[in-house]
Length: 561
View 1 (cartoon, rainbow, N blue to C red):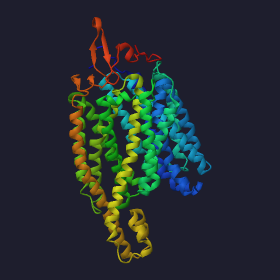
View 2 (cartoon, helix red, strand yellow; view 1 turned 90 degrees about the vertical axis):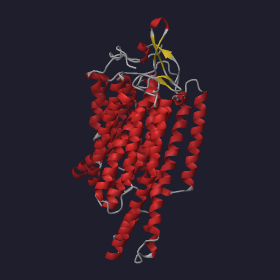
View 3 (cartoon, rainbow, N blue to C red; view 1 turned 135 degrees about the vertical axis):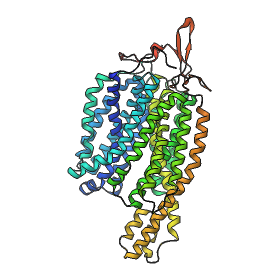
């Protein structure tokens, strides 16, 4: 519950939020602009097939692998300091990528961008947690932060398309430079320095294990999406999971773990994390497939497709801001349930698509999906950070963001594989007789190959093949949507029941986790002599409020009692 002494954010904090939202937007934008630049840079740098894959994938690999380590490091050395280091690194790596003379140099630059992005992500979110003490303001600030990610994904292709029309391929990377300069100038003026002075040394073995485990799992999932069931993705997945299990075992034994496993005993943290994972799997996986449908079934160009993605961004953004206000009145659990139910309606609409549906049906479905799932993601990431003690906010933020990276990779891999199976099943018995036997295997493999082959065939045969391939793809998308409906409804019921007493606006007792203040930071209890004390649901430790959060004057350190 909020007290009269809870400080509210002023102009300085809101300007600081703008400074934090911009780099968060760029981290996502840097993923999307590259896809538009690939054809042009491929002509100039002439990368091999393997090099092209590394140029595309290494950024996401490094971000996912390094985020937990960088988030925990920020708790130890200072979150603003890490943010400044990340801004310098991101700006310099962007310049290196823009003027890369070879494919090898571009791969190195993209890896450095990923490492810098892994620093920026958890630093921005954990600083928001320290700047906004009022639960309602903090929820609103996290919604703004989440909106910046959505805008980065939506605006990236539009900005990239405009730049590529006027400049060379490297210009898409230079967009980040002025933003990072602004962050370096404004950051020290408007952002607090927050760290845990009692934190122990960084366990390098744990850092290496977390990096290896996440990289292997992400690589295995992505290879599974590309190659299907094969030895390499299966072995890397298994090895990554084994190292991950050893990592967890090590954390339980360490006095100063890289990641405190006690966090997972908190219901708000663990249920929100699981919900966030499934939400991102279906949201990003569906977004990937819908983008393919718009381009290859409807027949739009990438830039047109990006424009038609704006309605889903607008609906998701509006829903997030409405949801954070409603959650303050009725509790987050019921907003979670409502959002997942709206997503089920969106998947029901998407299940009606076929090759002749056009753009209206799929955009309506996507808008409903984002309106339902984006509030769940926004409130979920907020509950994950709020469930952690302030001195562990960086590592909690890193866990939440790593979950989104893994969920996105898993969504594309799993839903993409299911769609490929449905596509092959639909095309296999329907290939027109005029298609040569030499290309039938590639035609049944995927839709892009079928469209490419159809363009070389005589008019009637080519048209028939295009119709069959597009209908099979659309049918696969509809099957995935039908399967998602019961998953969303079951998740809505489960999450509402598990979280119904977590983060309640009346400050009720949290089941299995002590009291909650409505924002997730632990309930306020009366201590000895009438002094208020705050109990963290994750650690059960009790501290005085004045030591729990930095003041409005931004002290240099966050100290514990």
